[in-house]
Picture 1 (tube, rainbow, N blue to C red):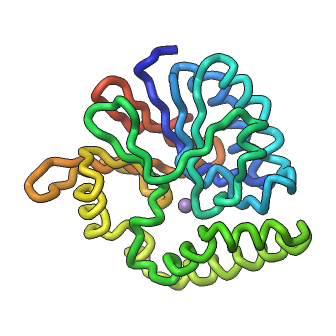
Picture 2: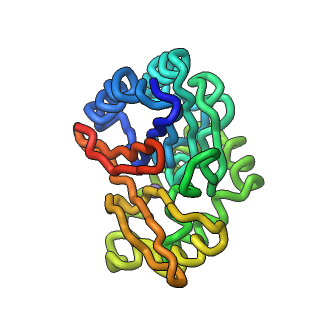
Length: 243
Ligand code: MN
């Protein structure tokens, strides 16, 4: 393990129906992840999460691998995405993961680097931004979590089919980040580098913000046995396939 190596992953969308991706993550956690002093998971680790008390079977499978990674000295941080925003303190405590809010400025990294899931940059999707405001409200979350599990399962299934139907009708550009929102983000947080996931469009973009060279790195999603990783070492951030 090297102190200067940071790993970032996102959008694994783990689900019982895709065990090969869960297996791929477990292999990563018990191998390549050891190189990193810190691992940041930038949201959508799980396809759906209806509360820690549901004891999600994929979540349970990951507890031991996460614990072992932490025991070897890699700190693991979790930032919620638009699918797993109900992951709570109880699960994080059991898995030895630390929950972090977005956006997060990486401590001690040069050039200044900001982390987020990425959904807040997709401002053209007004529908979704309305939904997001609702479900990220702590009162709403408390209300939902106090409902019986069966009810939450049904709600999740319903929400998923609605979102699939809606997204299928949206033009592709609406589902990507809005360039203005990206520029505003660089200005607001005065960072030189932005790292996010969510759009499933892995790339390294050079962005000109008011005449200054900036960089936006986008993590890819995980599918089957194909993953996506960003490794930061010293001043360099690299986007890597994880096979
Ligand atoms: Mn997402």
